[in-house]
Amino acid sequence: MLLAIVCATCLAGAIALAIGLSSDRAAITTDLASNEARAAPSEPRVIGSTDPRSTEVPPDAVAPRTPIATPEPPPDFEGRGVLRGRLTAQPGLAVPERWKLLVSPNTFLRGSERAESRTIEFAHGETLFRVDDLPLGGYAVRAQAGGLNCLPVSVLLVRGAENQFVSLVLAPSGYVQGSVLDADDRPAEGVPVTLEASSTRARRTLETDVAGGYRFDDVTDGEYTLYFGRPEASLVPPVSLAFTAPALTVTERKLPATGIAEVWARDENGTPLSDAVISGFSAHAGVIDARTGRDGSVIVRHLPAGRYRLHARLEDGRSGTAVANIDAGKTATIDIRLER
Image (spheres, helix red, strand yellow):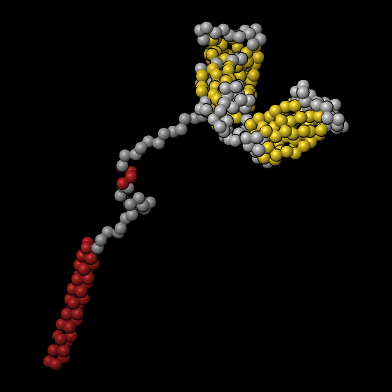
């Protein structure tokens, strides 16, 4: 009996001890979990993240920003407009009876692709002008009168400013001059010199005088190209000019060594023929374009050396050909027989 009581007491104590250890273990586990939760680092957050939990403000959200300029809206070129104006002249000049008004697109202005070219001729000395029904756009306006200058005026026709007034002023023109030497530094007489306007390709040609000089009068402001010899076969490199009145003197030019051709046109009996058209060329850019005189001959100077093929013709249908060598510093006599 005593043994049973002792066993029961031991069993109860063991059970109580087990329960106590279990409670202590649970408490320790709870404390450790709490401490780990407090010690664990917070979840990383990405700057600028779209995570709604993030409270970080991106640096560029508070940094000063440069305002972006809003582009100016382009002008409205839908519609038609009117161009009015007056033409005057500088003191000492008068507006001529005949002159032209030139209206053209100005490529330096917006809307030039919509602009149209207009040319209006005046024949009674009018000084007021008006151009109706112009497409809105960018224009250049100037007057053209023989031997007079007129600076172009820029005009922008846009919606809200469809009716514009301009003033044009005529001013004196100027001249371009210079001189030409041959290969021996002597004045080169009879050299064709051509002045070509860059804007219109209009050409004026003259020949140098006995002193080798040339002068183009009534030259208006603008850009030009100067050729020595025929433009298609210039004897020296062409010269580009930017002319502004009143005058421009071009640096003296020196020609390379050239030859001379004395060309005769005769019929089948050897009789000289006047007024025969002579043309010819060589592989070295030499060109002949002349007409025989009363004695049936013509002298062509300043020809590059080389082998030339010549052709002569008359209005009555007779013609003939010849081949000749022209040497630098020498004169070649060429006889062409013309037949039907």
